[in-house]
Image (cartoon, rainbow, N blue to C red; front, top):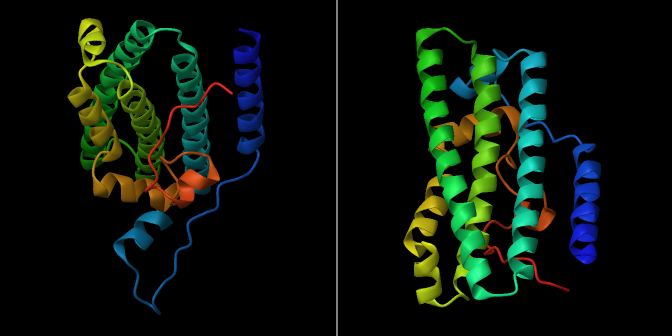
Length: 215
């Protein structure tokens, strides 16, 4: 128990240091006098709104990283397959509900922007935060899928774990609400939004996630 608590404490300390490092602003290059639609949209975002977007996305990523690591450590330290299956079922159910809420929120934001009830800057700031949180859900689903692969099928079934549902959750979260939504988040915050704060995950999204080991 002390080792687990120490791991969580150390991990949180590392993430707190990470938040002090500002995200690199996305570079916008104009082609002579011709501006793209994304250039024009970016110019409509006030500095305060862009700062809010960056802070919101960073906070969502930090909270997600803490939750992701904590979940991975918890299932890694579970002593029985039954315990692991129960933890997976609880985590997946929670994340499925949260993803539905985020998907609904994106629809509401798009409607509000179309109706002109929110500014372009506020729309983009909130979208960036939602996309960042979706990335955290995707990575927790990857951990759940990896751990479930080592648990007997009958044990998973008894706990109500559906591996197809886990894969569906991972894929939906990985879509980040669609390419247009993902592009919007990247334009205001940067290409790394929605990805892990770990350098190796930001540079290579092709690697599969694995649950932390008990070392």
